[in-house]
Length: 109
Length: 115
Image (cartoon, rainbow over all chains, first blue to last red; front, side, top):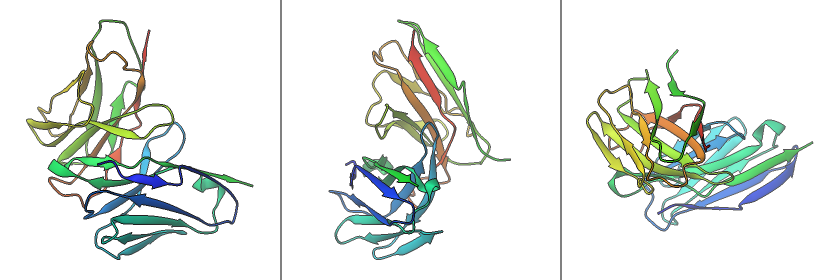
């Protein structure tokens, strides 16, 4: 039930945009997004609760397509501080939480 | 300040030894979670608890045990049955109780290695 993320890794130059996708084989009722810097704990970015919902956090926003069982995270005008690994997360059977496979994002000057 | 405290930060285990990782939160959260993260990998759920005196196995519970005697505390024991315990262990909590709509807050983690 682990969501699958794509791409696995991406390298950007400062100021470029990126999209990270999260797909589930099961129905999605909510999607979480987290960012983890190397050697640190994940930090919560946002939760999307309804199909079609979009949310923003600084220059990071996300959308949720409940019908397609997908969510996408959009990073615009990337900054060096955006580097890290991004995880989506969903709740499965028995209220167990599943983190996605992760996407490593590296922003270079 | 409210938060989640994990200790120790680094832990070494001898073969055949059980070790216990501590996780304490003062956020008054109902739900608590333990995850394992191997280098370059994602987070895998070991155990979770939504209420005191109750917990459920995650995907990789074999070789681990937990208890939830107090709301604030959710210790994880890595038993000798866990043959490959070297990993980064993360504890998290949320206000959710059977509710997926709340974020998880993480401690700083414990790095466990075999001697």
